[in-house]
Amino acid sequence: MANFLNLRVTKFLMIGIFALTSCKGIESLPGGDARKTSPDPKERVKKNLEEGRGFRLDDAFKGSGKGGDFMFASANELWRASLDTLDFMPLSSVNYGGGIIITDWYSEGSNLDESVKISIRFLTNEVRADALDIKVFYKKCNQVANCAISQKTGSLSAELKKQILSKATIYKKQNKDKNFKPYKGGTTTRKK
Image (cartoon, rainbow, N blue to C red; front, side):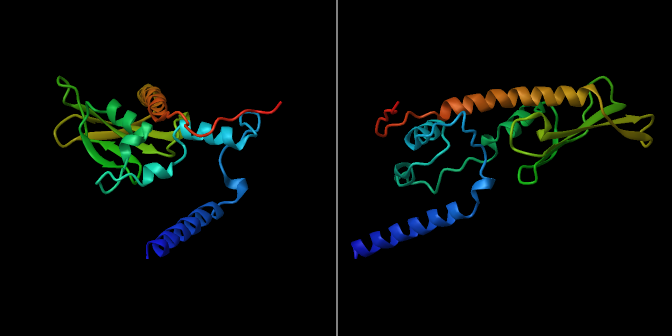
């Protein structure tokens, strides 16, 4: 019975790996600069595992007693950096799945007639300049019921983007350093 179960698990894993690898064609795989990548597959495996880009079966079968190891929005460097940058403002809507953060109207203590609202839309998870769409709205009120709302482009949205991207870059480096695990596989010697 145990042999039958082991055979079924092995078949399931092989079919799953085949299905995952056959979903994408070679041309749609990311990266692959031949000048930066070693031709030796053992060295590529070592590099990928050290940088945390692979998975190890021994980690998958460790009995931790938990349901799983989930890394939600805290694993996304841009998301974390955006929330850290806007932590002084009250948030109106935050949707990680939709990729949007909207603050509530905010005004500094002395000037209650003017307030600002910020909307950040995530266009990609990669840390790069075109990954964020930041909109800044200003509200100026003459009286309680007479307010004018306008969208402004300018230095505030550019400063926010710069600050978010610099924090995200720091978080990405910290995450890369944290995920580094030395490869304990066989040693490779390169033929010359």
